Length: 476
Ligand code: EPS
Image (cartoon, rainbow, N blue to C red; front, top):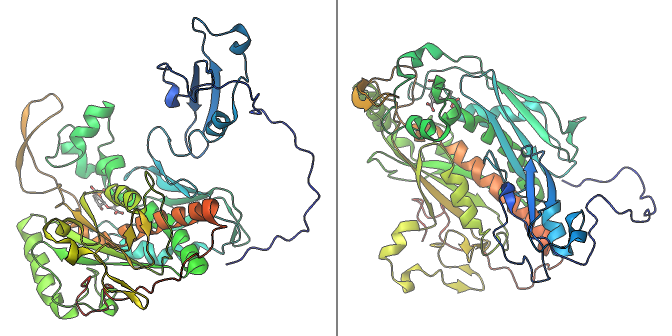
């Protein structure tokens, strides 16, 4: 994808000082979220205290800086703008990575989701997508259907249309570089299913922790904690997947790597999209069907493991030390409902390995294995990026169990309604989505900082150890 500006460039205008134009003399220490300054100079340039107040919420935050009145601050510095250059930059981008209530993630590509399971709609704003990417409402249908409920008897029976409306950021079929707002209306919520448990806490569910945190919650379908929210992650990632494919030849795909005790007995990528489980070994499907049928009849639920693989990621994506590619993948994947563990490459198996076994030997014709999951030092190596997640069993069960109500009184809870006996079955497209969004953000950040570096060493081919290349999803 290449975006060509339609008009010739105009000659540059003389630079105008803007509202934040800094006076270079002094520095103001900054504290996000309106906290009081704790003391100490910000950059050793003779600072005065200040307060940074972030108003509004991402993706439309605004920031104001006020010089605090405290003993010793020179009078001349009580008025705006006494600020030095390094601090000015942090004022200009104050809330980008620090949206206060954490409904936004990503830096250069940021995604904000909103909405509850039984509200009128859910939606997202994707900000930072480069202009000129062709995108049409129909392109969202495929991945949203892969994630949707009601597609087989093994998932929730709720039937949502999951139709994406593009509200902004796209003109004549192309992204304009402005925020892309996507909306999906909720059409099949059945809130009466939740009437009996509105004042109770389901064991193993977010009911209790939301209540303690906010003192209020929308109990209908779990409100904001519902997996319904993941619809918008998948929708946002349709944009990221397309950009990654067109711009870098990167493909992101996943599969169900374990359900309960059952593991794939073979591996074939072409089998994955042909069954409702995203299972990579077709001969096991009858066994899985019976397993799930028995589980559903029993009223219980089960956990699962999903693995996501990104092919074609070039070396160099990821920012040490606090923006490591693996660190951001872990955070993004961990933010998916029910996820309790994330592994990159061999993950926790590395605990029992020796260095000689774990290191991925390098030769000019390629890496000999991929225990690292395609990331070293937080930066991609050019091998497959491999991440796996562990999902807990669904906590909404029709089998009774003891709990307490909002007054702390003991009660027995029974959850009726249309729940997934294994949330992992629908998690493959969601995990792919989070990986794609992190990769696109990191790709844009790599271009922003290191776009001029180019390739300084011969690229080592991906080599052995790719998922699906050695018959069983082995990593060499
Ligand atoms: C969910 C409970 C069920 C699922 C829902 C996730 O919702 P409800 O009881 O409100 O029908 O259907 O999943 C979706 C609606 C979806 O689109 O993924 C939960 O508690 O997380």
